[in-house]
Image 1: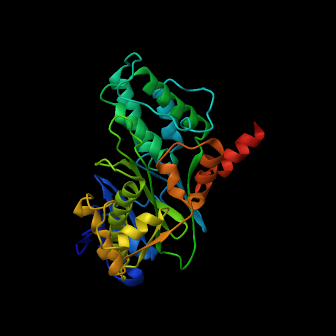
Image 2: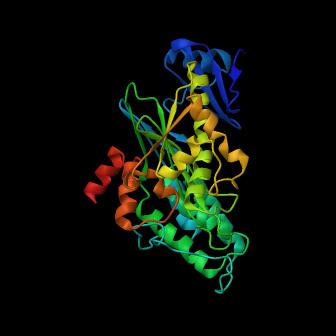
Image 3: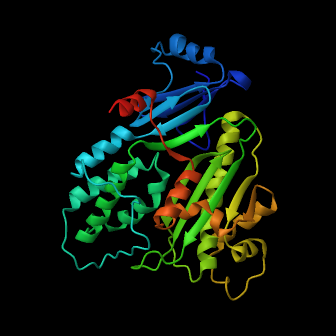
Length: 350
């Protein structure tokens, strides 16, 4: 039919060029179709596939979508309610944060064991909720480490997350139009030895397209870092691979040149290590694979810059924060309470 499959993302297909370009995203038998020109979408629907037009996207794989002339919002309110029902937490008292600040949990817990099947159901559901709730990325990744043998204290932490979800059911991502600001900017951070069982650190990344958060990750590092500099270096390498993929995918879909991606890093020593080719006592043991970022900095594909700790947005995906800091970061990454006019009116009448 003339569609070209993306070389960077197998579920994306492209047809046409310029303003007539048509993009299709496929998940099994569910499709999202978009184009600058509405007539191109109509041609695909009526002439090629003979499908009915359901109008603007409003619901997709559990994600509620609302679009208007100036913004797009994504949320999973109904899905969140289903998780609360699964966890038996309907009507619970809400929590201000999803996790206690500086909470440390271990696989060697001495508390009693809980039902592992039910625990895994809850974790799996929460992991899907993270698709529109990046502020839950760290806590859900953290509590996922105990699925093999969950204990009572792990389950209590999951209940704390559910209490937070109960109080923020209407929260979601809010994307606004900002002409001319389609450059990717990433934030990367790490939390040294966040896992007390393995002494491995946590890497966290956030990527914004203009002012809109479009990609995020919280993941335990695969090797043990011997210093905060090394942990940050591993984190920036992880962020660099994501940055290159995102920039190349966008360039391919929009048929334009790959743009430079900016990376905001909180460690000056890490930036120095990424630029200095001389091995020394602090870095000679680091695996060669983590040094590939140097070549991409040299050719201009990635531009890494220092950012003060107070402005490091990736903090929210690397550690549990206190209420004030958590709510500040939640707002700064674009997560807001989203209510429709009907819901707002219903609340006012109530």
